[in-house]
Amino acid sequence: MEDSKDKILIVDFGSQVTQLIARRVRETGVYSVVFPFNKIPESVKNNSLKGIILSGGPDSVNTGNTSRAPEWIFDFGIPVLGICYGQQTMVHQLGGTVVTSEDREFGRSEIDITNDCRLFKDVWSKGSKQQVWMSHGDSVEKLPDGFSVVAYTQNAPFAVIANEEKLFYGVQFHPEVYHTPDGSKLIKNFLGICDCKFDWTMASFFEGQKKDIQDQVQSENVICGLSGGVDSSVVAILLHKIIGKQLTCIFVDNGLMRKNEAEQVVDLFREHYKIPLVHVDASKLFLDKLKNVKDPEKKRKIIGGLFIDVFEEEAKKIGGAKFLAQGTLYPDVIESVSFIGGPSVTIKSHHNVGGLPERMNLKLIEPLRQLFKDEVRSLGIELGLPKSLIGRHPFPGPGLAIRCPGDITSEKLEILRKADEIYLDEIKKAGLYDEIWQAFAVLLPVQTVGVMGDSRTYEFVCALRAVTSVDGMTADFYRFDMEFLSQVSNRIINSVKGINRVVYDITSKPPGTIEWE
Image (cartoon, rainbow, N blue to C red; front, side):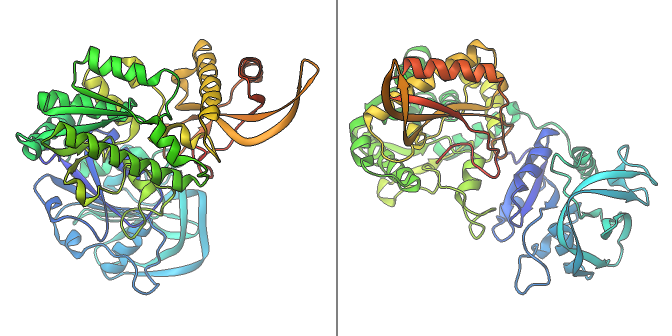
């Protein structure tokens, strides 16, 4: 993918914020790819590779058989930037010394700039003090040959090091995070050192995908798993533009969708875009299989398995399909894989991550697998999708199943749909929909006593959730006016039989997730 464009390789050592490095690079207009340190494909090593960034990570170079950068990285003849653990392993592998220090640094720190450096060009000047974000226990003690110190902190005497001859740089702090105010500028400077052209756009991404998909698919047929959300919709339109009539979309109504959503999906793709669409009403099948299932991971697995079963059945009816396309995103992958197999610890599984059973005899097409949600929206705009679809809040693949903790019944789902519809309607009326990354209602498996019309009620509690975010990897709760929350609460309780109490979730991510399950 994108072999014709300048590319930056990000070597992942297990940092929870590795994806932020990729984002900062892409925001400048340079394409980036992320691979675990032990699973870098040979195909990466080509003429389009302009630089390498070594991520942070939880390891210590002084502890046994820990992760190391492949040696070819330092012999490839292109610039290298090591961040935190990336700096430490670079120093260690090139002949320097790293020690475990009692003087650790976590959080904001003040850095002293002692020398000029190409990394600092037009950003930091010699003699100045700057704010950075630290998160380390180990520190560099001795530099490899050819390196010099260009900045230090109280607890990190080698906070920034440089080998200007080889264009190797190491920073102990994290330039990728928000709390290093000039971090993005430093990364852009590194890309300039790499002699990158800042010309990667969604238009160029589309052209790269067009070639890749045409080469992969050729004259074969493709089925696309369409949920109606932004991700699968963008995949469907992308493929429709590239392979035309070779594409058939399968929309599975699992009974876990929002109010009137199934009808809207069918109308948009079948009537507006004229894309061949198979609409499968499998709601009874899904609800029967989910009966009495409370564990969220089991719910996800059941839903994912049933999707595959339905696709398999429908694919047989269509006949001749060799590929299944789906809208897997990078955050889905990050949350679903372990460090051994990928970049971070498993937070939760995603029903569309992990491949297909061999019996299906279908190959996966996942054109959005390396993109973030906002990048998918940019691609959707490039493809001409309507703003009403592009701007929709994310909706999870397992649907309302993970917004209804505990037992799932058709009655509970109907209560939830009504509450969710009212909540989103009030948000839109207040002109807040586009300010919020994601908003939804959750029906809790808790009943409380209430009083309505002098009568005792014993009904469910509804939790409201709204967050702001850029990429879904981190999020903060939206700070509604209390008058707004009061109005929403009153309307839900008055209009939705089955709910007599409403609460608002003020948990950020981390420590929570955006969804409740």
